[in-house]
Image 1 (cartoon, one colour):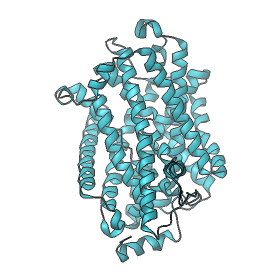
Image 2 (spheres, one colour):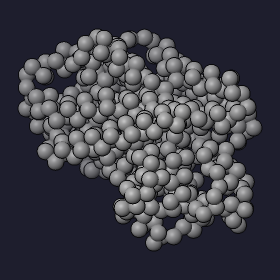
Image 3 (cartoon, one colour):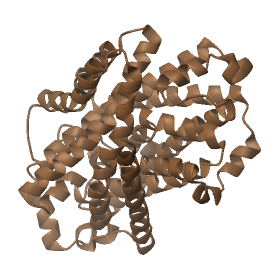
Image 4 (cartoon, helix red, strand yellow):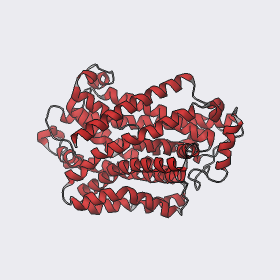
Length: 454
């Protein structure tokens, strides 16, 4: 692998003492001379942990509202967003495999201590913002399923960090399997509900073709910006660059690195395609059941009750559909909180190089994320509408943090001194910069719109 010596030494100097997620780094062996499927089965897993961030509860309201308001038109936006996500996540995986460092570590090595602390704060706020949607979603799901007070549901969700500690003891593959199972539940629930809704196949296929209405219709444009702007979450890029290193790779041989990149990219793209299917199903469900009904679908509770209201969704309405929705919401929230906790550890170790016992790190990460939600939950006790308003505010933090993750990712993966022969090809580099500029513009617009509405 052709790598500039000075860049290589920078990576080697720090990586000898600290590996990303050290307890699981390189912990999963891969077959050396096996066929495609056996090798792929060894690499599959990290992609599903990344993909859950693209179908977390924060995306649900936007996708379903997009279908309810504009039928199938915004499916094209979900398609474009998913393609951008596939491009950036494959770059994140490649960065970790080639350098043996995660995005947070590489960014910190090239900045001052003060800048490292600043970036940690910004990224931690982004993780907190992401966790808000997941914690609120899980808490509401527990209330809908078991009639628990929302505060109790939130506290139960917070305790899942203890489950994560236990799972890490059992091995990283166990975490991958559990998250994959939760994703399968989400996929099956919405596939079933869409099947019952009997959407227009022709309308769906036409919806994936971009329409000029998306640009000329102001409400449609704003909702499109919400879908695209919330798709790529900064913590997923840090996560992807770290957990791609859980597979054992001999970096002394270029062909080993190339093989690891190939299978990690396939894994990432397959799992993100599933996320694309889920987001499409959410929008299709909104279009098939709620288009033209003038229903208020701004909250999870509204969606839950609407699915059992025959005046809204017609003959297929039933409490069973509502319960399935709540089960999927709980599965989404729980799978996303697992990856959010791992992301918190990655950025804490990478940016401020803080080494603490694992249980302290994960508990601290969870408490940082859940504290704002608990404060709101206690202050607005019994008023779920106010608590769910946090979801809108959380997008501001995600928007602010995004450039600090995407710009370094494109820079590092395009750097031939750092990446050697695995640096981005010209078309990848220019596509990535174009996607980055578009995402930043959209997020700046979203920030301005959100602030103006507060």
